[in-house]
Amino acid sequence: MSDILFPRITLIGFGLIGSSLARVIRRDGLSGHIAVCARSQGTLDAAVRLELADSVTHSPEEAVKDADLVVICAPLGANKTIAKAMAPGLKKGCIVSDVGSVKQMVIDHVAPHLPDGVHLVPAHPVAGTEHSGPDAGFAELFDGHWCILTPKEDCDKAAVDRMAELWRRAGMTIEIMDARHHDQVLAITSHLPHMIAYTIVDTATGLESHLQQEVIKFSAGGFRDFTRIAASDPVMWRDVFLTNRDAVLEMLGRFLEDLSVLQRAIRVGDGKALEALFTRTRAIRRSIIDAGQETAAPDFGRAQTHEDKETGKTQGDLVKGAKG
Ligand code: NAP
Image 1 (cartoon, protein in one colour):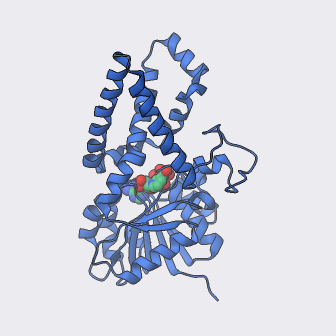
Image 2: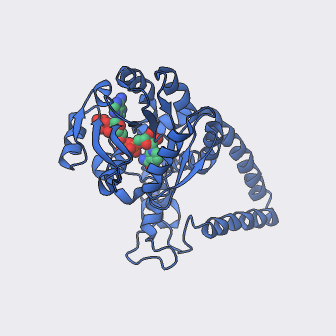
Image 3: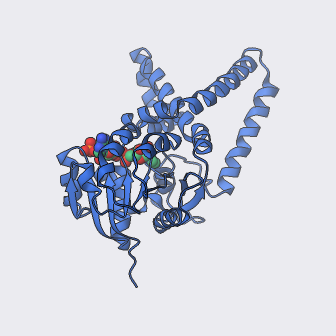
């Protein structure tokens, strides 16, 4: 029996996520033809060198010709331009999807350009690393993580089922959610933590040089884990904050209020309040471990050579998949 889910798939944007998806499609024989579209010749050459593309082009319109599925895997800020450029080439019945970390904006920027008879099924595979580009991809990236689909209510159900099946084959568990709800959830679980990491690392780089050297030397005290997050792709994260502005600002407002409470507790020496807060947060960590989203290994952030006995994953695997 054939494993082909979509006879022809087009990937527009071919970095970490696009090339990882291509590796899954190749590994499992999920398509007869992968067409790749990117801006730079270097990326198209890499797609051919890695044997992940059957055809390559700079033109989105040419890339989507005869495609049964088109997945936009470019930074969020490029979506509108890509949607406009590819629209004339889309065939009736084609599914258009994406992998962006913000979802309402995809509906706002892509849907208006799609011709009748084309189904939009936005998707967010919640898995990533701090590395970018076609050589950074690997087929196991998505394994054991969530993929959130955010179709509009009137979206064709068969199209949603087909997208869900593709991500299931990549090893993901599917959740279907309203796009705005997705953006709020990710604002607190992913976007705010990135904002905090970027800020802490930037604060450290602004210190006098003698202090900066000590920060690097003693980074294992906690700082090091923030630097991994703060090493994430600058263009991707610029677009995340610009396209999920309202939800991020809402969560930032709440965070700043809570930070003020903590600041006051320290200033007035309220040890009880501090202990109560730290006890509550410890319980959250426990529930994340219980939900299988992390191991209890004490050296969080470090790659290990041994397999974690409970999950069969290395600590490095868990950390690799924890972003985006
Ligand atoms: P990436 O490694 O930087 O790759 C981006 C790709 O998009 C590159 O191939 C680039 O082409 C291409 N591109 C940029 N602008 C384009 C345009 N106008 N037309 C066609 N191609 C264009 O990025 P990524 O990490 O794979 O992220 C892609 C998407 O995945 C983003 O929307 C992000 O929100 C989402 N996501 C990322 C993560 C993560 O952790 N990285 C996790 C989940 C979801 P060139 O190389 O030719 O410039």
